[in-house]
Length: 87
Image 1 (spheres, rainbow, N blue to C red):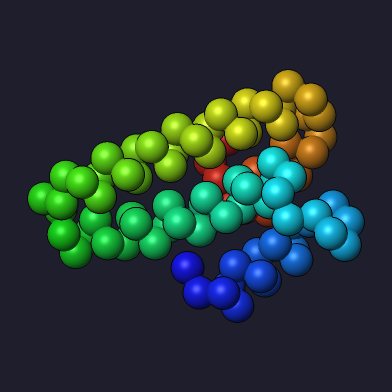
Image 2: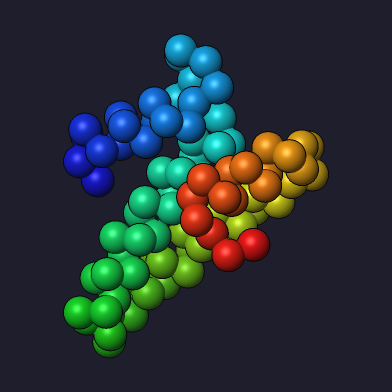
């Protein structure tokens, strides 16, 4: 991911000025990587190594979302809506 795109994602999802690693920021960054890998998989459907990486990222995002949902349901719902996920 390009440095500028990553910084823009961090700025839009952070909780305070120095926040770069909170769960919502991590979910947003992983979602960006998932979207990029999904496009790659459309062009290269037999790339098993990338498919495995994609599945690992989806599981990582799912765990982060479960952690956020357990702590604050309103924050979870707003994050899902902001990212455009199907939950």
